[in-house]
Amino acid sequence: MLTLEKNIDAFVEKYLITPENIWQPTDFLPNSQSENFIEEVKEIQELSKDLDDDFWVVMVGDTITEEALPTYESWLLDVEGISQMNNEEGDNGWAKWIRSWTGEENRHGDVLNKYLYLSGRINMREVEIATQHLIADGMDIGTGRDPYKNFVYTSFQELATYISHNNVAKLARKKGHKLLGKMSKIIAGDEMRHHRAYTEFVKQIFQHDPSEMMLAFRYMMKHKIVMPAMHLRRSNGQKGDLFNQFSVVAQRAGVYTGFDYVNIIKKLISVWDIDKITGLTSEAEKARDYLMRLPERMYRITERIVVPNTKYDFKWIRPIS
Ligand SMILES: [Fe+2]
Ligand SMILES: [Fe+2]
Image (tube, rainbow, N blue to C red):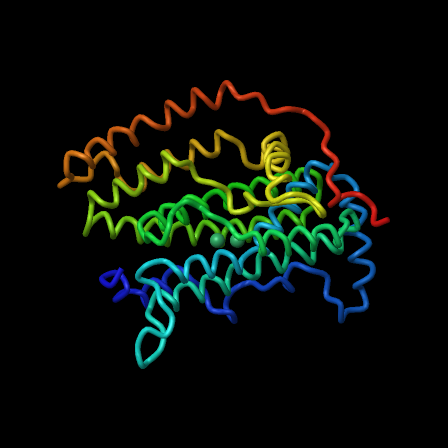
């Protein structure tokens, strides 16, 4: 972490964008200072009627996941090698990275939340309650404070969010909802850029510490990548009681499926050139063998999974009573 930290300014420069130069939520929303505001909101509400409940459930889940950003920022600031105020000049480089990344991510929940509010399809109070709960419930992604495991997790998750926002964009465009399509697409673009950054960190760790990095990768794959919204719950419910239903809906809507999970593993194996890494201990060689065989094995299991068609009652899309 100390070695990589020396390049943090270059990473920030290459993979993150300053507030003035990046898109902001306002760029994709009706301007409330304009005379056309009400007309534009009406148009959004008309178009929103054409998208089905499953679609809105996925949108809400994705929004709440983005809105739980305080959980991710505080988690990452606690990872070994990342620290705030560790010397007289202030933060170490990693803290700077985490903060700049957080600043970018914050725009995702912001724009999605405002859009849900304008759509007229959502019971915002229930969404707000679920968000407050999710932040309070926190998460345990099984990485501990280990930076190697955490960077495997973030490499994976940034790609997962790319896939999910990108699929939402496709569904929205198919229904003629251009603005929502554009907005989701641009969020997906951010996630892809973040994914590239985190995979680059891991790539560099592989150069310095190949065996330990390989073992960390296997560890994370063996224990499965849990979703950051794992503790999602309904109002007056139990911790995590809503996550499975949300996950089923995301799968049948085609927004994030078991096959996406396997494809992400494949992509990580290829981007890190797992088959070509040299200088491994015998234990790390075994880990490599496990990883190389994993996608095919998981693909076969995924093929057998049947996604239920049950209609769930989500309070998020019920009228406010
Ligand atoms: Fe995001
Ligand atoms: Fe991201």
